[in-house]
Length: 454
Image (cartoon, rainbow, N blue to C red; front, side, top):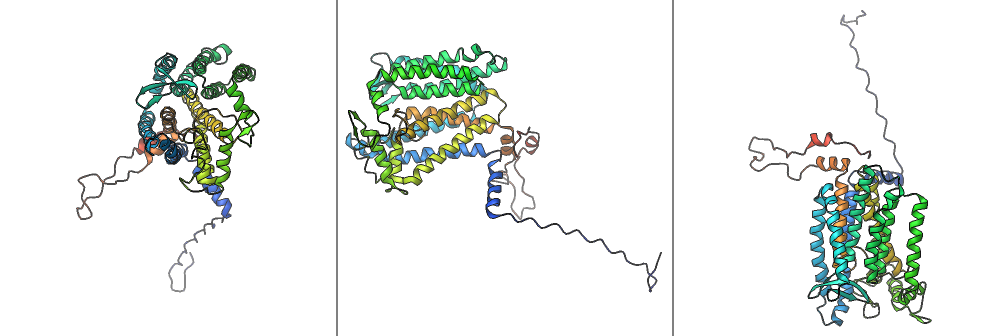
C-alpha cells in the first residue's frame, strides 16, 4: 500500500455527489395548463364542483328573484320582498333536504324510490280532482296548501322517475336482463307514459318534455340499441306533434321563433321579443343590479321563466356567461360521477339527475334566447318556485352523496387533517406534553380501493 512522505496512508477522498439536474422550466401557459389539469383530476373535484356550483347558482338566484320580483309584488299590493321571502324559505327547507340526501346511504335512496313514486302519482291524480286542483296560467297542475302556498306535484314526478327508473334498471342489470328489449322497456316506458299522461291532463307540456328527456337519458345509459332508441323517440315525436297541432297556444309559441317584433302577424310574441330586448340592453356588464327596465311590466314572468333575461339586463354578458359556466360545471361533475362509478344504481341515478338539470336549463335558456319555443319551465335552482326548488335540491344532494362515495374521494376525505390539532385538556407550550392529533383514519384511508384517478 503506497504511503505519503509523512509515512501516513493517503486519505481517501469522498466521491463527489451527483448534481441533480435542474428542473426544466415550463412555459407559462403550459405550466398553468399542467397545474390546472392536475387539479381537475383530483378525487374531490366532482364533489367540490357540485357543492360549490349548486350553492352559487342558488345564492345568485335568490338575489335575482329579489331584484326581478319587486315590481310584480308591488303591482299586486304586496311587500316588495314577498316573493323573495317565500323563495328564501324554500331554499332553507331545500338545504335541509340536500344535507339529508347527501348523508343517506345508497341503499336508503333505493328504498325511497317506490314511496316517492307512489306519492307523486297520488298527488298528480289529486290535481285533477275538482276542488283540490288549482289552475295557474291555464295549466291544471297545482294543489293549494292554504294561504298563498301551492305545490306542483309534477315537479316531484321528475325525482320519482329518476330514482325509480335507476333502481329498476340496476336490478335488471344485476340479473343480466337488459340485453332483452322487453325487459329494458317494461315497465319503465309504460310507467313514464303514465306520468306523462297525468301531466298532460293539466296541459303542462314543458314538464312533460323534461320527463321525456329523463326517460331517454335512462335508456341511453342502459345501453338501448339505436333502433329501439329511435323507435321510442319516434313515438314521442309523433305524440308531441299531435299535442302541438291540437293547441292554438302551443302553435303560437312555435311561430314566435326568431320573431323581432311583439306583434308578428296574427301571433302575439310579446314575451319572447321583450326577453330579447332585455338581453340586448344589458351589454357586457349590464345596467346594474336592480336597474332593469323590462321588469316594470314589460316582461311577463320576469322572476320565474324569464329570470335569465333580467339577469342579462342587469348583470350583462358577464353575468349570463357566469350562470352558463356554473351549469356547465355542474353538468360535467354529474357526468364524471356517473362515468367513474361501478354501482349501476349510482350510474343511472347520477345520469338521470344530470340529464334533468341540464335539459331543463337548456330549454329555459334557449327559450329566453329565442332559439326554442317557450315551454314554461323554470331555470333549475335559479327561478322562483319552491315546488321546483325542493326536489332539485334533493337531487343535488344525491349527486353529492354519490361523489362522496367514490373510493378515491372517501380516501381523500379521510386523509384530510382536522382544523384543531389538540384535544381539550392538553397543555400549551409550557405544560411539557406534546399536542395530540385527532384520529384522521389514515389506516382506513390507505386500505381504501383506488378508483383509477390520478
